[in-house]
Amino acid sequence: MSPAEAQKLLADVEAFCQEIRPIEELCYVEHRPNDQVVPLGKKHDVLGMIVPVELGGRGADTVTYARSLARIGREGTGVRTFFSGHTSIGEYPILTWGSDDLKRRYLPAACRGEKVLAFGLTEPDAGSNPLEMTSTYERRGDRFVLNGVKYLISNGSIADAIVVFAYAKSGQKRVSAFVVDTHAKGFASETLLAKMGMPTANTAMFEMTDVEVPAANLLGPEGDGFRIAMGSLVSGRLSVAAGCLIEPRATRWCCKRRRRRTPPWRRQATPSGRKRRTWPRPGPSCLPPTPPGTPPIGRCRCSAAAAGPRFTGLDATSRMCASAASTKAPTRF
Ligand SMILES: Cc1cc2nc3c(=O)[nH]c(=O)nc-3n(C[C@H](O)[C@H](O)[C@H](O)COP(=O)(O)OP(=O)(O)OC[C@H]3O[C@@H](n4cnc5c(N)ncnc54)[C@H](O)[C@@H]3O)c2cc1C
Image (cartoon, rainbow, N blue to C red; front, side):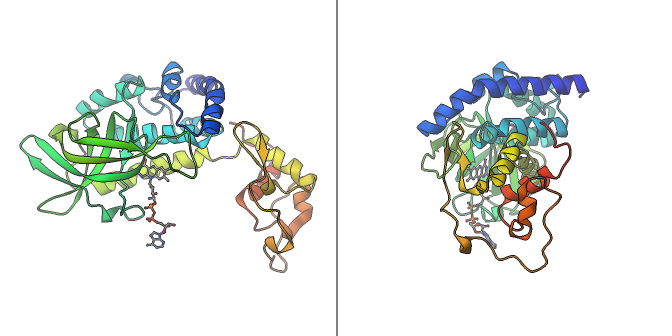
């Protein structure tokens, strides 16, 4: 991607963010999934950032994609989660392990917003350890037949196709990956609304009952599913990290609060800009004891540095505040 193309993509992402903001704020307050991410993503052509231009995407390199997600993350982790599901763990595995036929069938449509993608690994009893999965597949002629339940899947009930992982029912017990069309017979999904966070993101569970998948929708070689899952999650984790980068303005705000002796963790901005206290008022016992001789973090220009050892070891926001303030030219996204 040339620098001019990268700038154009970042400008498009900015325009997308400006337009999604009021809608996201309303959805957040009303606790409902934001259904405008796809139409607006399509309008600003940001649904296939990492997909090569010849397949209808923008051909973004990793840094430009991470910068885009850092910007999108400022509009809320719900919006960013859509991109993680659709792009980082949806388009990416198809792009990396899919056959030319799979790429041609799914990626251009995903870039145009005609096919939303998702990634289905987690199950009700297999989260941290995906090898405990119970979903199975068996080959019947030119098709695979899949059975099982997947849980906590981002974009799970708005997706048109999901990268799904399952064990072979017989023979060698190895995991394989498939691109499953959600419109296939035997596929049923349910949106999970009772969540503690990310109210604007679509999170779902789905069940496959004898879902038939064409043999051509096998992703990579049979039995290579675990490697594909782990490889995709690396891409997914990068997107989460990029989306969680604190914005420079928020950093400056934290430092300002600190100068006014109001610790930033006592207040938290909501997407609507209203501030509300989310933590109990910290008493002296709330602050962790500091080991003797602990040096202050960085060369923070705000009074956090003066607070020295007391500041060390507090929450991540405060630490970022200190390290960002000590950087002469903070990174801008
Ligand atoms: C909003 C949201 C979106 C998600 N999107 C997707 C998605 O798109 N696709 C997908 O496949 N999954 C998705 N997930 C699932 C996510 O990947 C799992 O939640 C995660 O893998 C943890 O699994 P679990 O929730 O079952 O927790 P568990 O595995 O039950 O773990 C519970 C706790 O026990 C700890 N723990 C577990 N095992 C050990 C151990 N051996 N030793 C020590 N501690 C342990 C864990 O660290 C954790 O704190 C999503 C989850 C959420 C909340």
